[in-house]
Length: 435
Image (tube, rainbow, N blue to C red; front, side):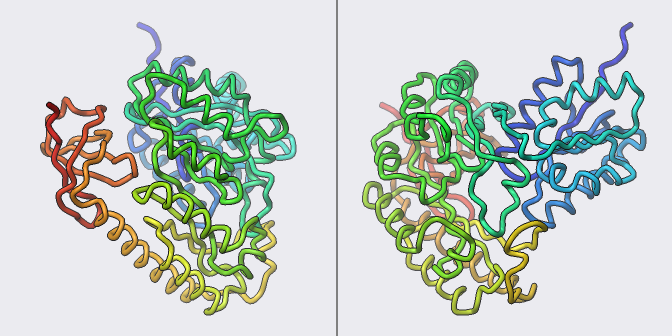
């Protein structure tokens, strides 16, 4: 009998970009003879793709390392991702961590695992200067047969005062449209119905050459066998009228935009080094909603940024209250080393940050409820994703979570549903019979 395959477990923290990269590494591990298992189960090797957006993300990484050692005291633990790039020495010095790979080395993870097996090393740290991160490594997820996250861009040339992403991922870079379309075609040959385009700053696709994100989405729209495409978070200054109008006319691109605002105070936006004003943002919302009143618009906002006065926060609150947006992603400001924001005074107390966060979370609940209520009685196409206790769950084209009764065989199909009732987290619907 041959030697049993080593069990390797992958776990992603943070964004969908990380998720797409982890998924690609997990697929590649099969070619190296590994057996993929869940990170909550016994494994010989645990790989954590880390996030470092907040201190809580850092704590979660350390917590997962301890959990893995309880599952298997002899486990080999590898850390990759943003935390691994920003704090490599801190992580390699953790007693239970064996391998730490920075931004330029993580895609050679499996090769390094083989090298360690041969050399018998117990610890290895590889962390090149982030300025050397110039190669774009494409990736996509296929763990969920209904939806794939396709990485089309990496890195960022913006240096917002609160953000460590340029330090963790380097300069903005992307592949060519031709190579990206090849990946879309590969995904289209699977059972996947929907692709989500993701990146650090996806509107910056094509920077350094004569291609643009607008050029890319026009080419993706021509690909058959993919029913739906969503655009993940895109910077307000890069969401052009051309992109908005194209998505409105396309049958493939969903009426769903996620746009980071961060603050409703021009003073704070300027301090953050954001590249737009409150009026610019409002004009974007009006443009989208004028074309399609049912479009879903999600908004990122940060509370407790240094020097954010009560007046600044109230401007943010009132601005968002009066905008026709669908939900908020609320982030509580977290001090990050090597950022300009950490030098800005006065800092906002933790209690005040928590208070402001709670108020915006409540506003988000109100926004989502209003958005869902506006869908009542309408017929919408839903991509059925999950089944539970005889009920099916999925999302409408405009990203409303929907529950509908139906047979499990309807999974991974698009069904027209009639929206009948509104619940706090989803809507109740019934499938519309086709004639």
